[in-house]
Amino acid sequence: KQEVTQIPAALSVPEGENLVLNCSFTDSAIYNLQWFRQDPGKGLTSLLLIQSSQREQTSGRLNASLDKSSGRSTLYIAASQPGDSATYLCAVFTGTASKLTFGTGTRLQVTL
Amino acid sequence: DAGVTQSPTHLIKTRGQHVTLRCSPISGHKSVSWYQQVLGQGPQFIFQYYEKEERGRGNFPDRFSARQFPNYSSELNVNALLLGDSALYLCASSLGHLVMNTEAFFGQGTRLTVV
Image 1 (tube, each protein chain N blue to C red):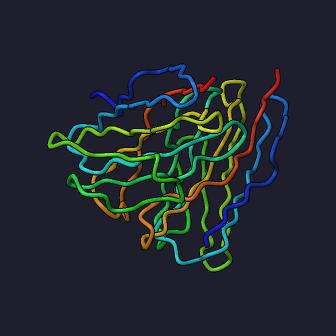
Image 2 (cartoon, helix red, strand yellow):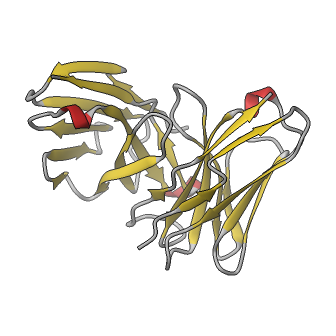
């Protein structure tokens, strides 16, 4: 059974700092990994999708890496801004079950 | 282009009642999945539908059912509501069945409160 863990559960940083969010998964037989952002009470916004054959993806200030063999992914956010405050979720797709398995998220607060 | 749309946005129901949640996927997407997210947790998979057929089912009781229509929109039905069914219900849309190489796009969700 696939299990996804995200560390830390919560993080507070001052504006301008670079930060790293961690995601680990127990079954390395994944097709892809996706990072999402969720604002309170809202739906999920897709940030980055990494295929199992890829090592990283970049979008603006965001960079996500994937080490499939060790079951780990990181989301790097450069020059954080108060607008980045949200919960960040990672999810892995395991084809046999046709579903995304999510972690519990990292709640990020960027302070002025 | 319209994203994934869900209706209603909020809903309050009494224990024992029935509820129907609706989802319209992104135009051109044929796969719809449903997830339940309780407060403080990550979303949990309920169903996936592709080309009007159920392709995956999560660990939820038979009170939960769904269907997909010819226009690829979908309904999630929950019977005999329990307090524990209170959650944010999320619909995800993707191009294909196995979603292997495509992103999943989520709607804003339906907040269901059971009292």
